[in-house]
Length: 313
Image (cartoon, rainbow, N blue to C red; front, top):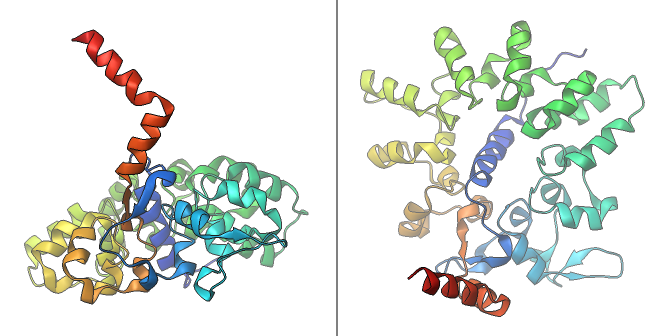
């Protein structure tokens, strides 16, 4: 098995976990979403929208299909970035329509594309070489890919697996293979327990403050050291917003622009928004209630609901 080390992809994976956390909320049916009224679409970056799980409806509405199967709008901002789209959990139906455009490396992150990933992994020639092992590294971050990794352990990237909340049984059985640095990003309660049992392994400045479930530890630090500083990427952590509101000197607006729980702060400070990062933020979309009402009326759901309410009364 090849050895791996912390690499430049850690911030990207943390951003992925924040989006994963956002996608676990009550599902926002993308066909009934719209941009918030105060957000001008011309300021958004189309390529970053491709990775936004709530942007699929906008992409579908704004794009046309050319004869080659490429999706475009006729402007430079309309180009589809297929690696970002490949990781988008709400884009699987599009990826299946254009399999030749799928980027398998980024598809590895897509927790709704396990059937596609299983076929791709099964077709690999064994034994895999180091290039292939490194190419498939993101699979180890995918919470729904753990059964696949158990079936094909030659693809496991142990440092990245250390941040996978569904891999705790594998990690505890292989303590010597854990990357404690990456474990700081793992939101599973047992991962946090392991870190608290080994406090010398906690990365206060760079690690635990980026963990969506690590705020209890961060608050403990503030109780002891009120003037403590953490890395700017804490501002992209959805769970950190109450702390950031209490200690605004900690805010990094570039990273806060990605934060789905900070949309109210961003609306109040539009001059500080990083529009590139903001384009990835799932919360730039909200329900289109007019369209929902029309859908309910057209489908007869509204009439049926009113009838049931009237019957009960």
